[in-house]
Image 1 (cartoon, rainbow, N blue to C red):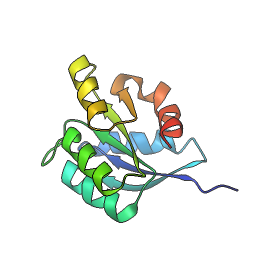
Image 2 (image 1 turned 90 degrees about the vertical axis):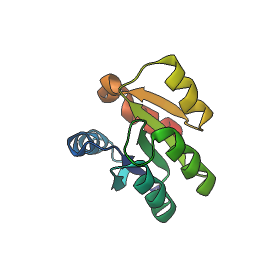
Image 3 (image 1 turned 60 degrees about the horizontal axis):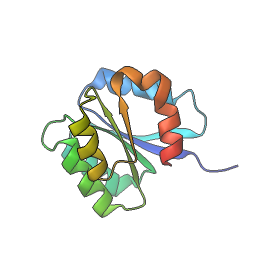
Length: 122
């Protein structure tokens, strides 16, 4: 039996975090390792928990997802970042990939694409 993929969820909306946990809970090979509600907390927890994947919102307080992604990957290069956002703006997509994201999922596609994006990023 292989170890589950450990995921850190970083989003400033607690209800959305709960919804993400429910979606991820449908996949037995994924385990939620932690939750962060701002970019700085996400960066700190990524260093402490060493998740395989960080699900990261771009628009968060304290530190936005772009900078949080850079810092997470600098401190934990073995971690993959999957961006979750309401924005489908091509500029945001480009900036997210420049910051090191491995996947970009818009919030309107979460139920269809989230699990596959986590599995692919891991």
